[in-house]
Image (tube, rainbow, N blue to C red):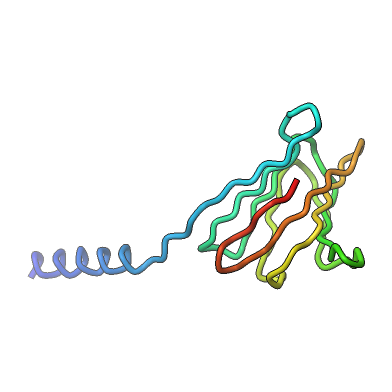
Length: 121
């Protein structure tokens, strides 16, 4: 009986492990003119979250439609990292603005939920 329970448990763990979808992780880096890293976006295609980190602490970010600069999504922040819920964004190209105390970092990003994101510097 004990052997049967252990066998079933191992089987269930194996099935769950193989059934989980593995996402592709992609990292995009935007640099300052001097070549230093400004912001980094990590996209796990199996997740609805983009991880945003900055070389400097930032107090907010905005995602804007590039054609009319309409605010699509944004949030306040306290520190150098945050998560962006990409399920709130449709496929398309946007302007990402990250606001620090000294400057604004701007980068164009393209969301393609089938393929992930890409960054245009």
